[in-house]
Image 1 (cartoon, rainbow, N blue to C red):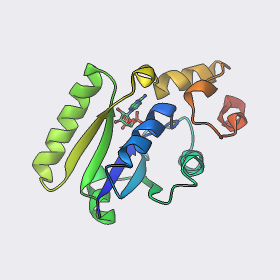
Image 2: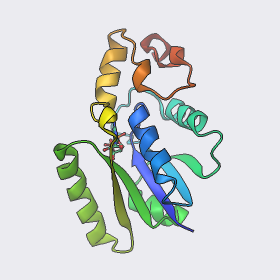
Image 3: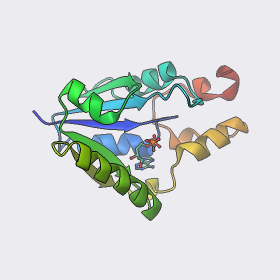
Image 4: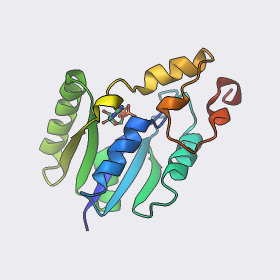
Length: 160
Ligand code: ADP
């Protein structure tokens, strides 16, 4: 049984994230999306909301699970018996950042492999930070968010 963890802040989960998970499903038996919750870092959307949205996106996909986790990704891998960490790459700056994390993880936990998927060209600019900025200023970011979610719930006035 090949299990991968897809860790991230997913604040919010975008069409880019969704595409990485769907494409990775042919490579793994199970994918656990790990919503990182750093207690020292203020998030835009609550972990509860992020969890609910991602569950909704994969409600018809029993091979995808979602969980909120506070600690290190590698510890969570051990907890759920995952041998792989899945990450998406958009640009060379993503690559440099991801490379350092993956190589340090590999040094500490040689049994866990990090697997990268290159984003689809149309998802290269999709960025959660910019989506938060659009939402914060009252714009419509729905084209960058997974289909089938209630867009009202993303609005800033519903997150105060
Ligand atoms: P983190 O805070 O860990 O960087 P993110 O939620 O920003 O978490 O991203 C989680 C993973 O998804 C990372 O590997 C990131 O590179 C990847 N990712 C983010 N946006 C996209 C996108 N538009 N297309 C493909 N992968 C993406």
